[in-house]
Each structure stands twice: as C-alpha cells, then as structure tokens.
Length: 389
Ligand code: PHB
Image (cartoon, rainbow, N blue to C red; front, side):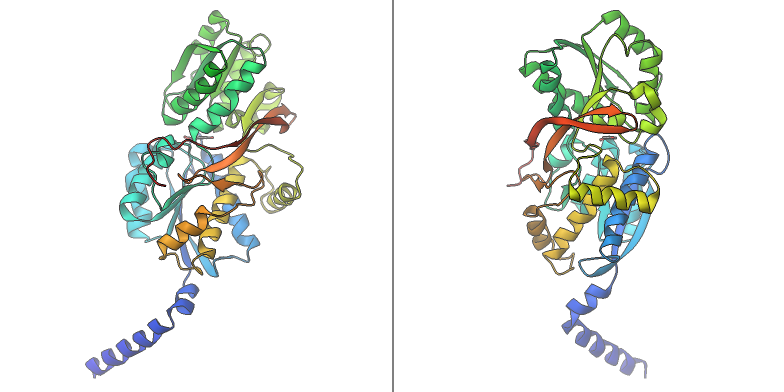
C-alpha cells in the first residue's frame, strides 16, 4: 500500500515537474531583509524597508509574477554578529534574495556569505567600496552608491567655493575612511589641502574634544561623514560649539538626510552632495513622494528611495527570467542591462553592479534638502579590484 502511494506521488511529481514554470511561479519569493532595527541607524532601516514594500505594493504585491514572503533580521549595525545573522536568512529561512544593509562593515560580511552561497544580494545603502570592488560577483548588486563615489562628488565643488584648507571628521570604519578618501581624491586634484583627518570610533558621539581641535585649527571648511542619530548630534554640537558661524560645514548628504526633523534650525543652510534631493520636481519623484507620505506618514528620504529601487532592481532581474530566480545567469544579464526608473532620476549599473548616477548639490531649507545644482553628472564607481567584465 505504502509503496503504491509512493509510486503515485512520484508520478504526480514528475507530471508536476513538466508544468514547472507555472507551478514555480506560484510559490512565494522569499525575501530576507537584513537591516538595523535598533541603534543609531534604526530609522534608516525602517525607511529602506518602507521603500521596498511600497514598490511591491504598487505592483499588486507581486514581483516577477510571484507573491512575496518576508523574513527579517535586526543586524544592529554590528559587524561581529553579521555572519551569524546573515546565515539565519540563508541557511535557516532559505531565502531567495537578501536585501541589506545600512552599515558597511555588516554589508561586507553579507557580501562574503552571498558570494560563498550564491544567494542573490541587493545592497540598499552600505557604500563599502569592497562590495563592488574586490568582492564583486555576478549575484551581488547595489541600489545605492559607493563610499568613494559620494566623497568624490563633493571635493571639486568645495574647492570651487573657495576653500583651500579643509579638516575632515568621520567615524573610523569603512564608510568614514572611504568617503573621506573619495573626497580627498577630487579635492586635492583641484588643488585643495586636507590639513587634518579627525575620527572617532563608530557609533561614538563624544564630539567635544574634536570640535575644540577644529576651532584651534581654524580651517576654511570642514567635511564630514556621519549619518542617522550620530549626524543629528554632530550638527547640533557643531552649532552649539559656535563653529557654524565661523567655519562652513559640508558633508556627504547623509549628514542632513532623514535627520532634519531632529536637527531643527541647527542644520539650516548646510550644503551637502548626494544622489537624491527633496523636490527634484520630476513626475516620477513627485508620485513617489506623494505615495510614500500617504502610506507611511513620514517624510521620504534617500534611504526610502534606495529601498524602493532595490525592489525595482529585483523586479528587473525577474523580468528576464519569468520570475524564476534560480536562472542566475539570466537574472544577472537582465539586471546588468536594466534602466532603473528611480525617483532620483534614471540610472544604469556599471560593470561592477553599482549605480551610475548624478550627484546633486543640496542646501538645507527648513525641513528639506533643496536641490541647488548638479555637482557631478553620471558618476561611475571605478570598481577597483573587481575583475568582472
Ligand atoms: C555605511 O556604513 O556604508 C553607511 C551608513 C550610513 C549611511 C551611509 C553609509 O547613511
């Protein structure tokens, strides 16, 4: 009896296998969201998740014809827990795709796990140069930026403002180090001099001694990388130390993105560069912003855009495989040639799978980072150390 049942089951399975595409497409696509839900980057994780889900909802809840099933891990922006955390999604939950994360150190551990296991990874923020450099792989993509890219975008522009001697200050980890390196690249090429590079460990916010040092050094300007809760405190402390009036403060746009409610008037007038700004005025961006506010009752920011675009990128890859994520080469080929219709403006991916995009100059006016020109058009990350062609 038992063996007859087995025989039937096998026959049924075989018949099912012949009709596999339709069957497979009905199984939900398992999406693993590895983002910070706690710590200095918690709000950034929320915005990325919101953005991702907004795009999915706009597609009727499906991507590539497949329902979406979410699995979530709070990565706490903690690199020492990153490998264990990503393996919960890869090995325990068996996800089809990883979406994460914010912190560069955590993202590098995710990239290693993605490369080793062959799981598709789309990075919706972390700029770690290595992810689209030496660690690049056919199954690893980024919807955001590289750290070099965002730093490089501002150096020339700050020099053109007439600043010759600059002090930099950032958290001491990949994102801070690489953003400052990118800034130096273009600032020094333009003839500027970085007189001192100050740093403190992530996620410390004891800025006082460093602000005293800046006051004593009296540079023409200060360039920074801070984000999330740390950026809020830095901008407030900079103003409270009386430096805002005497030494202009610049930064990678994260300094004032998703933070303006908390920074209040202390952020007013600050110039930054980033691949997004509030009020670009395009139909695409307007529609995105209206939908985001209506859905979440929160102001849209760059993190929401990057999450939204991670979902668009997943859809673009699936469109090339009729929803079958196991066709890895076809998925990769489709996404490599995709044009992503982002709220930031349309972008394509460079050979190392990082967005080729415009970087806007923005200035804080009230609660918004208003566009004030383009610092650099169609900037591509050089993909140093990536051998993918
Ligand atoms: C990073 O760690 O790469 C990082 C974190 C927060 C940001 C941007 C980059 O806003």
